[in-house]
Amino acid sequence: MNIEECDRICTSLNKKFKPTFDQYESSKGIPLSELKKLLQDSELPKCKIHKIVNSADVDGDRRITYNEFLNQVLSEDEGILNKLNIGERVLNRAMLLIAPDYGREHQRSVAVDSGYDNIDGNNWSKVDFSNYVMLYSCFPPPLFILTITALQIGVFIYYAVTSSGVPIHSVFIYDPKKRYELWRFLTYMFIHDGYMHLVFNCFVQLVLGVLLELVHKIWRVGLVYLLGVIAGSLAHSVSDPFIRLAGASGGCYALIGAHLASVILNWDLMQKGWLKDPLNFISSGVVRLILVILLGGGDTGLAIYARLKNPDERSRVGFSAHFGGFITGVCCEWFPCFSQCSAVIERVP
Image 1 (tube, rainbow, N blue to C red):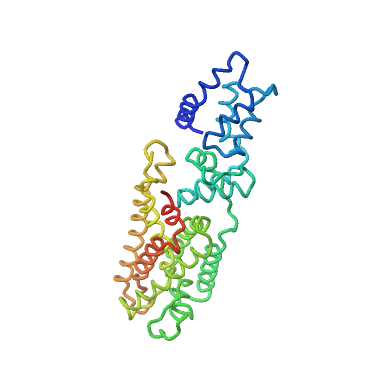
Image 2 (tube, rainbow, N blue to C red):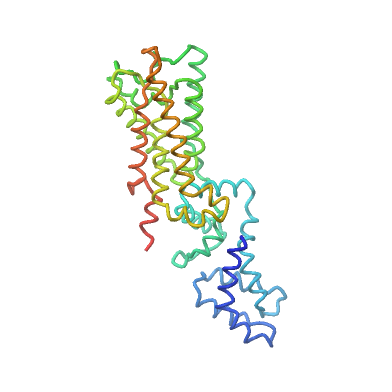
């Protein structure tokens, strides 16, 4: 718990509870039964009231002084964080960078299922969010993105060993002369135009796709990714109908588009206190928007340059899939069926 948060909680407790505790100062603390009645008027869940009252009675005299009460309330955050290892903390911090609002909602349910607390959902407040901000479960694991990435690397290694240059005769690549082979509209994502092309796509998938899959789960991310791949090949077949298409850019840019839409949907939340803390700054909407523009714009610019400057017409690879995938990702994130994050926001009164 940071100093600012600690001071805020102390001020609130002093205003609401200290006058009552002062009435029992001469008797060395308020009785447990009286404190429970006092806390029942607050927004704290019953289980948390029971835990605070019993844990705060350090000397076992069935009475609690204000200092004992204050120390117990402020120790709630640290007590939970100490149950998590460093890897879990890093994972959950990274997860919150993707969808902070839905992330906290999911962490609340994980906290209940894991036995950390039995939370009353109707009384789940901002203070409770700070208590459980680090809790998150990576089950089920992000198998879709990991599997797709492994297959793409494996196919690239196979063709790197058995042939040279772009495998233009591969059964996977999108070939405008073989549009009747419908699987090519999807399987072109396994072919890449050089190792730099592969590295960028794998980087986006592993950094962004894995985190998105942790938040939105396999069926949402998998469907958005595959729709981006198909939309990319369809956009390419219309805008550049005589050029082959290779690479997973359609799926990758669908993930980028979905993330950009998530930034827009959560803009106010991401910008809150963004200059007060390094983590808040890194996860702010402004920084994310700049990174999306730099990464997506830079890669797209290089793809356009390679497409126009390649002297060998047979080995040219199109770039329109970038735009088709990106638009698909944006649309899917705005569509409630795919966007769990937006669904959570819509439920907030």
